[in-house]
Structures are given as structure tokens and as C-alpha cells.
Image (cartoon, rainbow, N blue to C red; front, side, top):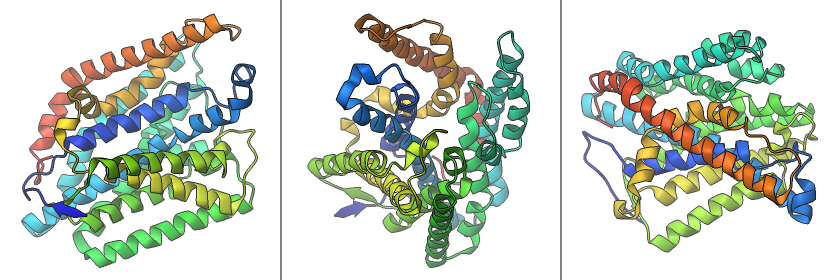
Amino acid sequence: MQATRPAAGRFYRPELDVVRFLAFLLVFLHHVVPNSNDPRFPAVFKGYSPLVFASSFAFGFGLSLFFTLSAFLICELLLRERESTGTVHVGQFYIRRILRIWPLYYLGLAIGVAVAVLPGGDRRAVAEMGWFGIFMSTWYLASHIGPSSPMNPLWSISVEEQFYLCVPWISKYLSRKLICGFCIMLLLLSNSSLFYLGRTDASGSSIWFNSIVQFQCFAAGILLCLFFHGRVPKLALWRRTTLLVTSGACWFFACYRLHALFTYTSTAENPGSWPLIAGYGLGTLGCVLLIVAFLGIDTKLLPGWAIYLGRISFGLYVYHQLALNIAGHIKIGHVTSYAILIYILRIVLALGLDVLMAAVSYRYFEMPFLRMKQRHAYIRS
């Protein structure tokens, strides 16, 4: 495998915007493809039901892909900043992260509160949004059955923010070898948690919403950054396709055979320590393989609309459950051939509404903060 290294003063890879969009699309599909909790569909899918349900859960690894990609990009930018300026400016890092995440994030929480207090809303979500507001939603959801809210997917931002507590400091003070050692320690800690949770027959929420479990994705992203050392791979298209297919196979096998994410449901049986460790490990490996499959690809092969949707993917993620809730007012009733068409139409309408909201949000709400963010950047991205 050959690799090339881009200019040191700027790091922008449009193919990673496509990966962002794919990560969102997987999460979206995870929330719309029928799973084993929906009793209406087994009669429709018949013997194929386990395959469909496993695919639905495998799409949930799109969130793991977000985490892995985030760690890869942030570590790359911080290490480039250290090489360029001699240090990592931690204060500026936090300013950049605040300007990128907090405005839209807290707008999303405000929407969640508004929906909760409106007629028909669940007022318990107001208190839940309070835990989200202090980035402790992971620990709250790990021990509580949360009320229905269109902003529940924002729990993942708490995992990101917890990761930000350490990443600029290790990038500033640790050598590459010590950063690698830190990541290995993080992987051991994550898998030890999975072993304990499997042995204690922990609930699905206690596993999936556990920040320590999810930290292995961040460790994998940093290790990938260290491996390439600022370079991008030059791979033949068939190799990239093979990596992409293998990535999907890892996710599907983790859910179909190891039942790793089936514990996300409250009624699923805990598969045990070793299947959990293997399943989440395969999920993380799939994320790494997918990123490598796209990293360094010829930009001529990338559709412009996918790059754009990747740029607004944060908004797509924030608003997607709200869009699904709005489109959900189209009633389906009993599952028939006609009702399945309505179900698909509802999904398409939700996706279109989500894109519209995210595009408007990006242009008129997020963009001023992004311009301010660039003023604090040492490596333009």
C-alpha cells in the first residue's frame, strides 16, 4: 500500500464528508428499519425476519462510525497543530469545539423541552434534557428508561464531550508511542467493562449507553491516525470495495451471530461477556475498515450531493428523529402491501424534511458560528 501526505497547513478530505453522511444514514436506517421490537413485521418477512432484524441493529454501528471518525480527525488536526506550532493550544481547541457543537446542540435540547411541554408531550423529558445539558445523559440513560423525546439521540454528544476532556491534553504532552499506549489502555478498559457487564447480565441500556464501552471507538480512531501518520492510502478500487463489504460483514455478523446490539432492547437476553467483547470489537473493526476504504479515494468518484450532506450531517443527526416524529402522523395500521408502501413513503418524507431542516440550519444558524470557529483554527479543516 502506497501513501501520500497532504500539505501540513490544511487538512480537508472531502471523502470523509461522505463517510459522515454514511454514518448518519446508517443511524437513520437503524431508527426506521423494523426490528424485533415491532410485532407487526415477522408475518411479512417470514423466515427472513432474523436477517432484517439483524440488519436493523447493525445499522446502529453508524453511531460507532461517528465516534471513530471524530477521534481520527481530531487527533490528526491536533498532532498537525503540534508539529506546526510546537504545541497544542488547549484553550483554542475547546473554543472551536464549543462553537461547532454547543449552538446546535442546545438548540436541539430547547426543541426537546418545547415538544415535552406541548399538548401530548411527555413532561418527564424536561428533566431528561437537563441531564443532557450537563453532558451526563449517558449515565442517566444507562440507569433509567428515558421518556420519548425527538432529541434522545443527542445522548451521543455527551460521549463526545467526555472524550474531549482528555484528547487535547494527551495530544499536547504525550509522544506518539505514549498516545498509542493510552489507546491500548482505553481498549483494555472498554473490554473489561464489557466483560463485567456481560457477567452481571446487565441490561441493554447499561451496555449501549455506557461511555466506557463506546470509548473503544475513539481509541481505534486515534490508532488509525497514528498508523497513517498524516498520510492517505492509495488503494485500487477493488481493494476499497473489498474493505467496504468486509466492514458491513463485520457489523452484520456481530448482530446476527453474536447478538452484540440486540442487548440494546429491554427484552433481549444478554449474550454474555465474550460475545459482547467480540461483537463490539467487530463493530469497531468495521468502522476502521470503512474509513480506510474511503480515505484517499479519487474525489472524482464522489458525488457532490453526498459531500454536501456530509457537511450538514450534524444537523441531519440532530433533527432526524423530529422529522420522523412529524412524518409519523401518517398512520399505517395493519401491515399490508399498501401499508408497507405508506411506511416507505413516510420514511422518504421524513428524510426529505430532515435534509430541509438541516440545510436551513446550516446556512442560517450554524454558519456564523463556523466562521468564528475558523478564527481559532491553527490547521484549517
